[in-house]
Length: 262
Image (cartoon, rainbow, N blue to C red):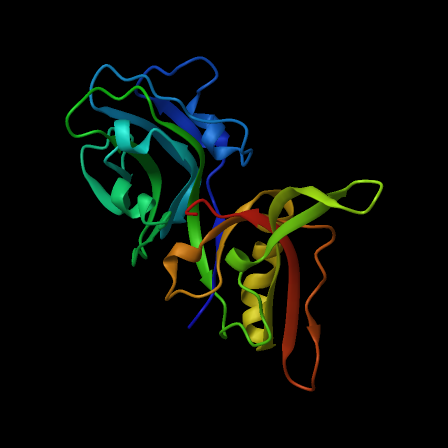
């Protein structure tokens, strides 16, 4: 059992071309800005929508995730992340793909064993049989995943079980129960790891800190449960890692988030 956190490496300004028209307010860059209230809304004349990206330097990508989707069953069969060494994509390779069946089963991401750096990437949405004009995508995360060095130690509450709910009971002046209001909020959880080597901290922490302090990210507490991946963001300050014994570090990152497969 291992946890995964993603270092996002794609920014909205990396988009070089949007191959298809979009509905008002539905630019492709919206799905890369980390805001759940914006979205990419393709309005293609055929069964495919795509946008292309160019990174400032050669970049290794091995993670592709989507979040905040609607219109999956009507307008979407699969999403593919391509990479190329040239802007014309004359030769391209598939880094990862996600099917609508995966998403409906609660699996919002795909991992890749890619270790080759590229500068040119393309995200393509395909509807096999019809024109594509109903899907909306709030977030796409493209980057490199980090495996937490140890499984999450007990005691621990997984994000999916960390629903934050406030219950208000309503009573008459005589004390009789007349109903209740249930206010559901986001998931409230902690990413934590103990006995982490100094080498792992030196290699990963600063890049990880930069990502999670600036934007939302994807977190999976147990890689044997892909349906538990959560789109999340840090809550308050991010405590620095610390030596909690003579040789090893520990860290705890308070987070909020939501899971879309309920």
